[in-house]
Image 1 (tube, rainbow, N blue to C red):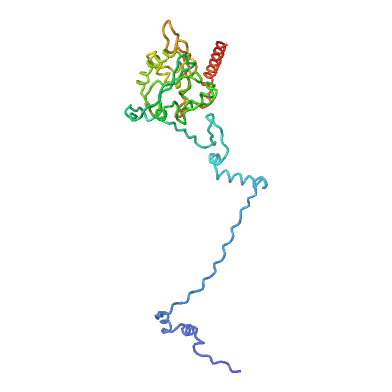
Image 2: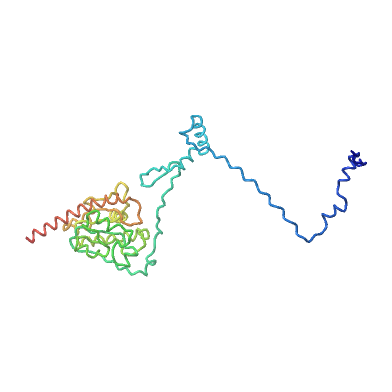
Amino acid sequence: MDRPERTLVDHDPDLARLSKAPSFDHALEQYKYNDTPPRPNPVQQQPSPRPKRKRDLTSATEASPNKQRRISSRGADRFPTSHRHQHSSTSIQEPNGTKHVPGTPRTKKLKRTSAGYAPPSKYSYLENRLTDSLAPNLICLFVGLNPGIRTATTGHAYNHPSNLFWKLLHKSACTPRLCRAEEDGDMPRLYRLGLTNIVTRPTKDGGELSKAEMDAGVAGLEAKVASQTPEAVAIVGKSIWESIWRVRHGANIKKDQFRYGWQDDSENMGAVTDHWPGARVFVATTTSGLAAGMRPHEKEDVWRKLGEWVEKRRRERTDAEERLIE
C-alpha cells in the first residue's frame, strides 16, 4: 500500500500551526459591514436552583436531650430576656384597670387639661336659658358649679352626654328612676329635689372660671338656701366646697380638713340665728365627664351615702303626709 506523501509542513510543527491560522483576508471578514441582523443566540436554560434544605423543626420536647440544649441556647442568644418578655402575649392587670405586658415600658395616661381662665366676653354671645329649680322645704338642694355650653343653650341642667349627674342620681337612689335633663324643672314636684349653681355664667368647663368669681357666688348661695330652707345641701364637686370654705374661714381648706360626705353641723348653710339652724351639707363628687380624678365606682360609693338618706327622708315625708290625709 502506498503511503501518503509527507510534506515539509508535516515535519515542522511551527509551520503546521501557521498553516492552520486564518489568513489576513479571512480575519478582516469579521469587521466587514453586514446589514443583515445577526441571528440571536438561543437562550441557555438556566439550571434550576438547588432547593434549600429545610431545617428540622422538631420541637424541643421530641428532640434528644443534647438537641434540646442546643435549641434552648440558640433561642436565648437570639432573644435576650428583655426581648422575650416583649414578645410574650401575657399581660398583667394593673390596679387602675389597665393591662401591662411585662418587660415593656409603662405609658403614662394623658390627663385632660383645661384651657385656663376665659373672660365673660368669650361666651357673651350665648343666651343662658338655664334657671334654678327651687321650691320651699326641699329634701335636698343640689349645688353645681356653673352651666356648660350645652346646658346654657338648651336650658336644662347637666345636659351634656358625658355628664354623670342623672345617672348617679338614679344609682344612688336619690331618684327611683333614671330621669332626663329635660325633667330638671319637675324635680321639686316629683322628688322634692332642687337644682342651682354657684356661678351663673356658662363656660366650656370649670377651669375657665376664676376663684374670685366662685368666691363671689357664695353669699348669693347662702341667701338662696336661707330663703328656701331645704333639709340638706349637696355640693356637687370639691372645688365648690373649697370656695365656700375659703369665704367662711378666710383660708384654703387643708388636705386633712377636706372629706367627702356629711360635714359637721357647724358647716350648715343658710343658718339664721335664733330662727333656723341651716341645711346640712353633703359634699359629693363632681359629675363632669372631664374630671378623671376618681373611678366610677368610687363616685358611686360617695353618692350612695347621700341617696340612702334622701330615700329615707322621702319615704318618711310620704308616710307623714298620708297620715295627715287619713
